[in-house]
View (cartoon, helix red, strand yellow):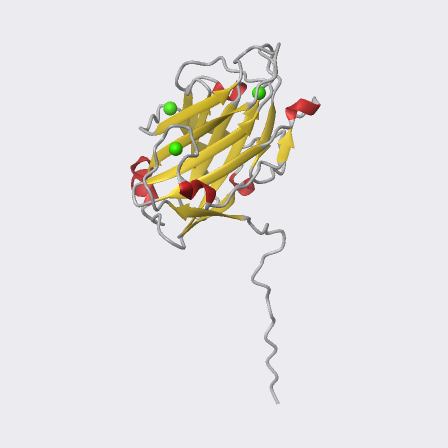
Length: 244
Ligand SMILES: [Ca+2]
Ligand SMILES: [Ca+2]
Ligand SMILES: [Ca+2]
């Protein structure tokens, strides 16, 4: 009698990291981009803190953050809310180095796979935007950001405190963003933004608490496997899922 043994394979390959899913609610009201969480829907969508902090050298380098997103047929919306005792900002130019200031950042891959290409938005309190398309391992193991990508989007900030003055204790700052889906062009059409679909993302905060030098801490929505290497490794990104 012939016995056929059928091996049973696990569908999960070994080492595959289960990815966190961040829920993004549909905006059922119009969102006014003014840096204020004055739309009811912001209080109904998932909120997460940036619990993974890197390069922390002082106690004050780990400060509270909250992160929310919304979607509708035209836009993605992002809300960052940061406690910050020492508001710090210097960069004023587009595609400069706002990431050396207090800076809110989001990286997006418009499909649920961890591709080697992502869209990035990094803004400081001056709304100086470093916006780019990032290519991992573009050529000869080199990562490169195409900064000439300058999409139209809206962002407004509010802050409470005194900027670049560490003689007092500040309260914090917010940033509300509207990123039109047209920014992603046809790359955003493979997996359209609609209920149930997922895209890939990372949210980050750079926290600078000294006006001089390059010291800063970084906190993230999802954990970074090797922070000394790069925060732009898509294998560290998680998923966002568009829900009602
Ligand atoms: Ca608002
Ligand atoms: Ca740019
Ligand atoms: Ca700061």
